[in-house]
Length: 266
Ligand SMILES: NC(=O)c1ccc[n+]([C@@H]2O[C@H](COP(=O)([O-])OP(=O)(O)OC[C@H]3O[C@@H](n4cnc5c(N)ncnc54)[C@H](O)[C@@H]3O)[C@@H](O)[C@H]2O)c1
Image 1 (cartoon, rainbow, N blue to C red):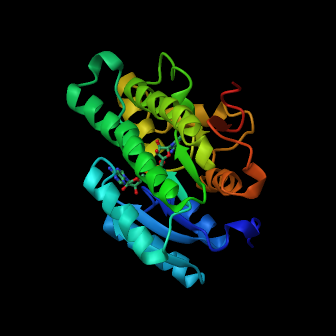
Image 2: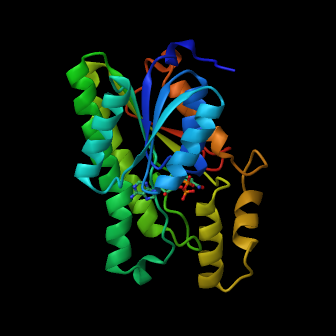
């Protein structure tokens, strides 16, 4: 059931929306009555989410786009506006994880992480902000960053390059929020914890290999440390995205909001 009636009729573009958190965000915004452009590098993933939205009575289009390519990003914004007439909400969700100790991280992995998680956010958010400024009706931009964008992941958590890319995304979002504030475009980052998606399965598998511990034990240990006592679900993130797109969040910008069950209490 829709909760934020003001989202009805808004147009949203979600990147990396073909599965997991991006899928949950797309379904939730569609349930609130938004028209959703579901963009992903994986066309089939995007189309399957579009089918889910349509079968629930919502409106959506699927777009194939790589967020590291400015021409793809610009084409995605153009296709969204062509389909729905405007762009009110961007959720810069696309991201990847690579697991390695910093001293073992190769140049290619560093460049790839920075390209998707930092440059992809820069390209998507600035293109969306320019479109919103042209329209003149404000807008909402939500960056799916991470708790790893606020802290060092830890001695036995080999996510240093990932964390650096997410620190970049959060820093970028804080400044963008200030620069576009005169246009009533609100920019916020959300910082998740341990979310039950293929990304955390990869982190578990690769960390277990690096630390020489049994597969499954890294994820189980991480989940044990969550104060709220359960692994996070993609819908926990989608709930907060919906709130940040609502009128109730009209005084929040340039923030980096924790959504992590108490895992990182700062
Ligand atoms: N899973 C977690 O625990 C967790 C925690 C905090 C933050 N996050 C962040 O949430 C976001 C989504 O993560 P997830 O767990 O749903 O990951 P996921 O791997 O399940 O899904 C990511 C989606 O992004 C798409 N994608 C990857 N590279 C892309 C590119 N260059 N251009 C466009 N799309 C691309 C993939 O095809 C996939 O559909 C990421 O930014 C991630 O860093 C995840």
